[in-house]
Image (tube, rainbow over all chains, first blue to last red; front, top):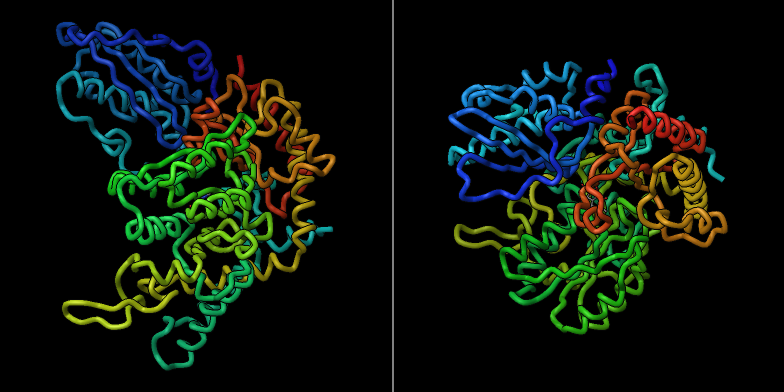
Length: 143
Length: 422
Ligand SMILES: Cc1ncc(COP(=O)(O)O)c(C=O)c1O
């Protein structure tokens, strides 16, 4: 099956909630957190910026360059996240991202597909003052 | 002239289909495919000769030791080293560079000493030196390159004049741009300032002859698997006087002369640096690869691969939005240079970027058509950063590739790029 399905290319060409460049972080502003993750295999980086109010994600912005899969995944995820509680956002699993994408993700594309989720997880950790988790937690130990 | 049809028949993998299409393998810079001569030799070793080396008086131990030491002689001749014991077998090129950093580096470098690298280096010739920087406070200095991948040799001169440079460690051939720095000049200049020179020959050994005595380098490293040989074996060449003055790298069996409860004395070179059971079948396979490649003249190999690269450059430069990195970037220097036979400093591979098309997406689509190219930073992040791109796509060749394959790949790249752009 062709993984470059229409919806993937649509999000790739017209990414939702992508903001370039992300506004600089205001340290005093406790309701915002920005976090960046890197896919070491290609060097792509993706930064995510959450605005959190009353325990909910009020808005999500992201920036970064990457392949169609990583860009579509974060674009779709960002639409999914708006209004979600932190607890709901934390419970998002890799399989949820795969079903958003709706195309088969083979082992070599796992990190592309999950870069956005990994950045999201660690953005929330950062917001809560917890240490970041590694890729094994986001993607399983196969990558 | 190379008989490519006959060469290809010697590589079983080329009879394989991917998704019903013939395999087009343009990723030899990552690892080359293996001819039957290598596969057969390794199988024969396990079926007929297998035993540990330098241990035991039985017939098999003698045969395996002969195979292993015979491989050392083969590499000694291949590199034209002065003595066979200047050849150390390691696991790969990376381990060979680490051996120099850990053994020579720790013994000879102090805080404030400097190691000079070039912007072209693979991470395996970067990180071991950064580790020494962290550990010992050694300075790591970088020779920049211009957009064509040419090194700023004036920077090397300036670094050397500062007087604290102890080692210049450079690639013989970039694994991204294919450019070949002027090694002879670099090594002579280093020596004039009493610095040693290490050559990372991982990419060059399968494309050009290597003569360490002519180069006069102090160390040279490569991997068997990029030379039509097996993975799991690498080579470090070191001048005998250096190797003799260096402490052992890993400790264990084989590398010792005597062991007491409180001390040990190391073996002589090369065993001093070969702790534990070495890659024996792999050594036999590497020797077979060297013998196999040796049936072709270097002149034929170089001419043939130059023609392949020229056709690659032509195919790529006609793709809309595609930019070849390095020598082919702004002007068709590579192309014109190649066609008038003057430019011999690019070989093995070309890397490129396509506007609006990520290398992962491009190579994924090509992969579905059985066409294997590599995408990413190719373990050369400092170089990509200098060139201002995150990742690129690399097309690399071996003597089994054909112009037809390259044309098919060029067409497929154009198609894929078209499909990925709005
Ligand atoms: C220029 C260069 N140096 C070193 C290496 C490392 O080789 P290996 O991974 O076999 O140790 C490579 C291979 O990717 C290379 O291209």
